[in-house]
Amino acid sequence: MSKGFQKIISTAVPLNIENVDTDQIIPARFLKATSRDGFGKNLFRDWRYENDDETKPKKDFILNNPAYKGRILIAAKNFGCGSSREHAAWAIKDAGFDVVVSSFFADIFKNNSLNNFLLPVTVSESFLQKIFTALEKDPQTKIEVNLREQTIRLSGSPETLSPGEGLGEAFGISAYKKTCLLNGYDDIDYLLSSKEDIIKYEAENTL
Image (cartoon, rainbow, N blue to C red; front, top):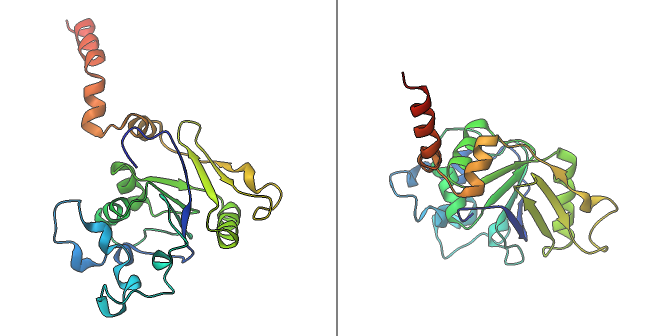
């Protein structure tokens, strides 16, 4: 997600596997690097290739399926569990995803994602299954995520969606993180944006 995110409409990649932990997202052997760049090529590395050989992609793994592309990753429940490595969020972001959707995220992964401009959207299990079903029927189904309104909407043709599936849901996010994502602020940027208010407050309250 580029800084200043407000709304995204994109096709999506469905990863319908529960309890995906951070070691599966980015294996521990790739954690030596300190830069955030380059982690995307190793996202789900052990699931993507035979014997860690990039010339032998596993045809049955969803990231190797050319039918599925987009800036939104749809994950099953309990995504991002396991160790607290921030590199998991780095890898997903570097691979080109701006949003991850699941019915449940591990708290540390969720916070790491928000700190790296990767938006985690929590939906109900029933709506998540509707998304998986729609994408299975039509990989070109698009999803709209509106951060300002805090809504996610599944859109598509009448042939791929059942009645009511396009209505979508609201999702929660802290007011502070929402402000940061809408404006492209990290924690320092947020403080700097309030500099004038801080100066004014100090001037008015200094004895």
